Length: 296
Image 1 (cartoon, rainbow, N blue to C red):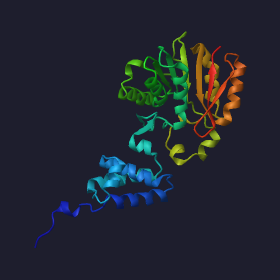
Image 2: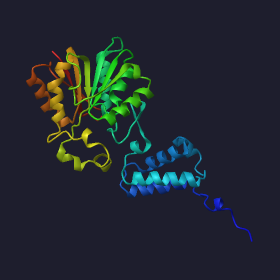
Image 3: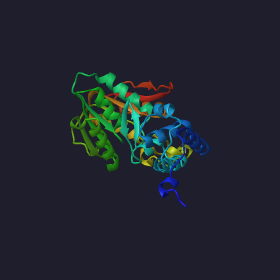
Image 4: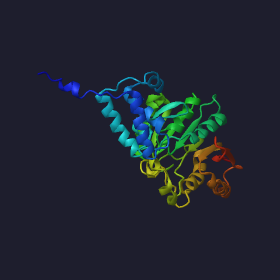
């Protein structure tokens, strides 16, 4: 009497198409927004291929080891852990940034900060730029990629976030033009230090609204990078009040915020008496998203 080798008994007979279908149903049942896409992304990551390869080879059999890895990752996604944390990466400004649960996941809305910085400073000068509350460094490093002579200071209160930013600076070969500073806003900067532009995507969610965010955000992203206080404007007001001391005359301040906070931020800038008339810039959805101020 013969028996099959133990290895053969554990072989997977699961095909790519069937596994994608199964994962999609699992994710949809868990309330995931894009179950089909996420199923394909997870499987492509484990198989080390792109999604086009999955579509071209739907009958490919997934190995037992690959299946186990996919199922472990699927459990995390079904628990609403963000795809960016599972994959360890998020594209921003067409650059694949490393991310971890220590940093806010870069959003497409924040690309408006990069767009405005590049438009304001151009490519010619040796600009000094500060990304205040840099997280992964996405905004500051994306600006650096557009301005080849600019020097970027990445500033954040969280040392673990700065480590992610450091890894990204190395990944994109921007270390020579990048400085990292651990600081509560501007406190650790040298007296008299000035920048041509300060960009910031500060925490701007009102404390009372945190519980209403999607689980991917409220349960996984760092509260420090989200909670802006009672009205969401604690850091916005601080930045507007303190930034003039670190801007050259004619220097620019760009702050991302909720559209509902624009009027309050404009009023704060006018009360300070240190800025010219503010300008609003809209995101791709047509909502006021970035406030632009110029130091007088």
